[in-house]
Image (cartoon, rainbow, N blue to C red; front, side, top):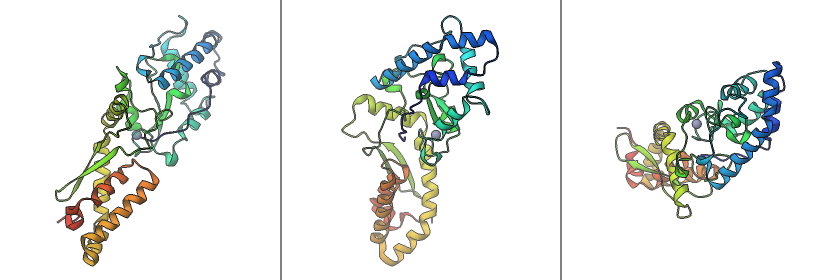
Length: 281
Ligand SMILES: [Zn+2]
């Protein structure tokens, strides 16, 4: 998971921009009338996320007894996500936030959509609230879909508010198979409280990150075989280990909890791997 800067756009302003070209006078009046509620619910959402109580944010259906949830969903779908609409530049700006276009939820695949932290089907006032919109890859967005957390521990990490990049928590272990395999897991740091530890585990499990990272690591290991065999021929297991340690440091300097950092750190400290376990045959 990677953190992102908190968007500075205000929910009400975004909502009013999105509805600025509504032609139907009746719909336009009704939508304009819920702008204050949109602002209020966005502020409530932010306070809840900061307090660790996002799971307790009340569901909203019909707003002001007047605007249907379906009508609010269309504000997002037809007036923000759609090309050439007033909200689309805002959509694009939110989408462009992650470095290298990398999905902050899985830290692997490419961003292609905005994910609603609280679903638009259940939280109609938050359909275009910037803090509820997180850039994501299609797979992460589909995996999460309309799942609602039932407790604080079930709240997945929020890239705008959660920063788990200051301490190592992503670890890997080597399986001494042919070819060797790497398994990824979460190791709870001492500084985490129970809720954060459970949330990271929830996030890791829900988005199926162990399988995703193992698959990429398998490809990486295959690509390292030639250089490792050469190093082993000239300087033995020690040469291989030094190379792998350098790789781990190189990756760690970029990001503490990438699968690459965890992978190389585990490989470097596995004597079996360094002494020839890297071979396919
Ligand atoms: Zn993703």
